Structures are given as structure tokens and as C-alpha cells.
Length: 140
Image (tube, rainbow, N blue to C red; front, side):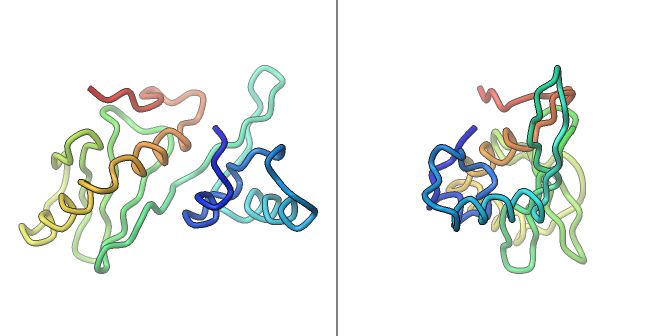
């Protein structure tokens, strides 16, 4: 998967820009910096090196961290973390899978989900290691 440069910069995913789309030494250095120092690792599968993103912070919402982890169980989902909240929700329809959350925070996350589902899917897909039992998001 390759992302457009400006989108990748804005969403802290410059390591996913194709080297063919880079202009000049500065952008190649920016991509290398992202590969070396962002939340990712490289695996080898059938002689090919594959870049995998590790636990990824998707967004922050009023003190709530929204994260996606690699090598997860079904269904595709995201985690909501804060000092008082540890919950997970489906990517498809934002249903609470696990944990407790106040009605006020649940309304915030559902509101955020309405405009951010595409971002959740992109992060989910980019964090799937080759051995992940769930795989890429397929939706319904």
C-alpha cells in the first residue's frame, strides 16, 4: 500500500509512501526516518521484506487515545484508552466489544467514528502482519 505524500505527512505515515513518489534526498531521508523511528517493524516472508506497523495511535479525542494493534482477533476493531477507560469497538459499526465506558464518552467516540471510519480501515489494513488471523478489513 502506498499513500500520497501530503496525506502520509498529515497522518504520521510517511513510511508508507512509495519510494517512486519521492522527490529528492530530503524526502528519501524523511521516509527513512519514519521507517527507523516510527511504530513499525520489518519481517521477511518468502525472501521479501515487508514493512508492518506496530500498535498505532489513530487519534486523540479529549484525553481518549484511539489505537489499533497488529495481529488481533476478529472482528476488526479499535481500542479506546485513557486513565479511566479501556474499551474496544468494532470498526464496522462502533459497537462496544469489551470494557466499560460512560455514555458521554461513548457518544463522543460514536460521533468521531462517523467521520473517521475510513481512517480506521486504512490503519487496520496497514497494521496487519502476514500471520494475522483476521487479515485486511472487508466490511459488510
